[in-house]
Length: 248
Image 1 (cartoon, rainbow, N blue to C red):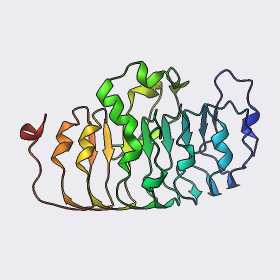
Image 2: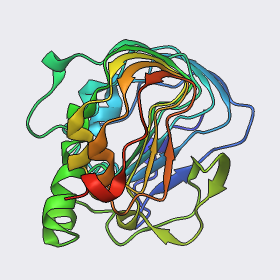
Image 3: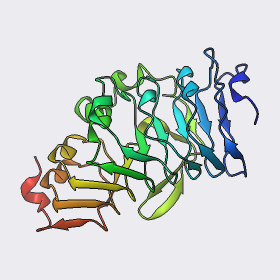
C-alpha cells in the first residue's frame, strides 16, 4: 500500500482508496508531520487492528474504515483529534465495551457523524462520547463548532451513510450540516438513557438490532431536527410516547 502520509504537498489532503480489493493490515507508519485531513478505506478487505500512528494526523476531519474486517476495540486513542467530524467504523469486527474510564472532557469535541453499526460492541449505550452533539444543540452552529476544525469548509464527496433504510451517498455536502449517530447491529443492552433528548442537533439516530430494554424515552420528543429514527429489533416495552405532551 502507498504510504499515504507522504501526500503532504496537497492543499487539503483527502485520500480515497474506497471500494477496492485492498487486503492485509493498514501500515502503522503515519508520521508525526502527517497533514492528512481525510482518509477513506471503506469497502475493502482490510483486517487486523487500526494503526495507532493515526493519532499523529492531528488534522483528520474524516476517517472511514467501514465495511472491512478490522478486528479491534473502540479507538478511544483518537478522541483528542480536535478536527474529527466524521468517524465511520461500521461493518467490521470491532468488539468490547466502550468504557467510561476512557472518556475525557474533550472527547471527540468536533464530532458530527459516528457509525459503529454491525460490530460486536457490548455494554450500555456510550452516549457520553457524543457530548459535542449536545453542545451544538445548546449553542447552535456558530464559531464554537468551527473554530477547532480545519474541515469546516470542506465538501465531503465520498461519505456513505445509512439513513431511512438505505445507504445514501452525500455528494457536495458540507460536513458541519450533518449530525447523526448509528449504533445499530451491535450487542448494546440496558435502557435508552433519558439524556438522549439533550442532543438536540441530531438528524438521524439508529439504535436498531441491539438488546435494549425498557420504555421508549419520552425525551426523544425533544429532538426536533430528527428526520430518521430506528429503534427496531430490540426488547422495548410500554407505550409510544406522545410527543405533543412531552416536548419542552
